[in-house]
Length: 334
Image (cartoon, rainbow, N blue to C red):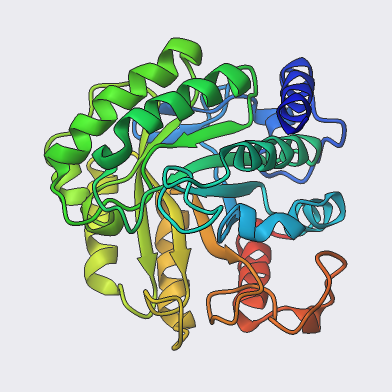
């Protein structure tokens, strides 16, 4: 029965993905209704008209563990606040139903992805489908599973102008050549079904080794390289490297960052986070904060004691959540 439901949802998505969102948002930000399918030109993320765009958003901290946030009122609240990007992490390794490749609930993951894509489409936002390599380290560990997964994602969402694919979240314990070999096998699988969409590629050292990437980039179009940072851990040295590779023409996208320590815990370093955002805005590098979550961590947007999943008041947000909304307002004029 569950498989039938997922098939119905997928067919509805295929029928509606190419259409203009029902709730088009005219707020001056990059929106699927106005910018359409994105592309990479001269190292910058651009709309269908070739003009540079900025995506500014937030990442779930796990798809199945965050199912309560897959609701229409919350997506409307986020869109109204200026969020134009949501990230949906599918953990490849984990226990119970979580690990997609370790006997997790594949069909439930797919159902949640379908719901997330539909909600972002309805609220005129872009969405990242994130293959969340983390504890497994080497993306090649589950290479065959990645090929099957992304073939299905590209088949299902290839007509959706708002979908981006992130093929390996945070490779670690491996070098760039290892990650590059993985990417060179997964990207063609996506391109066979979806030849034009943007693909995001992680890199070693938990997606911070842009220097190795810049020395030997991939030879595909519409590719962006992920950068991850946590402002209380990664400071000026990393900002300098980011600015250097960006100015050299390397296409960069911050698919995950936090205003905390790399652990997701205290301290928060708002001053360093502001310096990061200033750099990203100057360089036209899009960014997605970690995390849309109520977990009892400093990186979470919503207080752990708040029982609801939408209709949040200012007091329901943590300092992290309030910082994000203040940053969106400051840099987008809302």
